[in-house]
Amino acid sequence: MGRTILTIVGVVLAGWLLLTAVGAILSMLKTFFFFGFIAVLVVLGVITVSKLAKKT
Image (tube, rainbow, N blue to C red):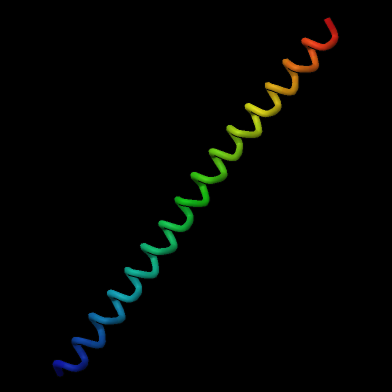
């Protein structure tokens, strides 16, 4: 009986750990994509201002 309970508790903890790890990875990727998007916008802004400065 005790072994069955410990097995069930182990499965529940393993599932919880898996979901936590997946959530952390997705959160990290979302953060990287956000910072990457901001970096692209900054680079495009600098390029645009640079080209406008050369034309005048």
